[in-house]
Image (cartoon, rainbow, N blue to C red):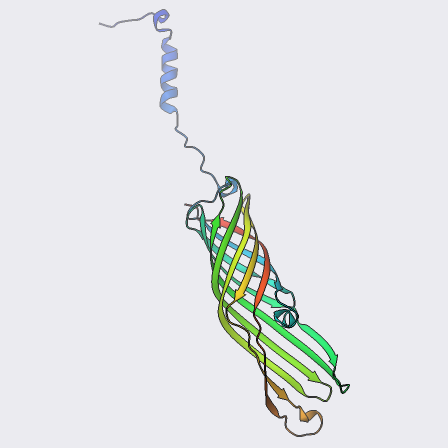
Length: 252
């Protein structure tokens, strides 16, 4: 026995029922859109960052200290970072800093002209832990503390008018500490970074000097090198401004 209900009761015609069934069967469940890197407003655990930073470094100390042998430093760094959590980031930074050559000319009591030249450079290799301050926005201030190796190279030449030279050539490697503050800012697919960093080298720079009489400039005799008993030491401290870009990828 087939029961027929009036459309007045069901409120639906046979055609309406068929259309509704087809619509229900053909309806696709579309998942919510997965945020792309371009839509990113928050750091995500597992994110990897690769970037480059330009560097401006100012030597600290008095005119008889580190500032005496090194002018303002320039160059840059490469960095790779990993988000341990949304609040902590681990960053490895390797750079090269070339300080401006310091030159001066003086005249001693006997009227002899003396030219001085100091050259200094560094290769810092720093591993730092960064704490990201949660702002619930694309702007992320941070504080950090980095430790690492600092490779230093120093040369000095003091040239007298009679051809004598007092020279030094010192290279060493030591540990340093570098606290810093700054911020990251997510702009589309690019991450902007600004960092203010203080670097303190635990090992002092202690160049040893020798005197080269350069007799060959006067006659055909061989040059004579003589060790100089004078010694100096410099505490290597500096303040740096680093600005650069990084690119996030490998989101989890």
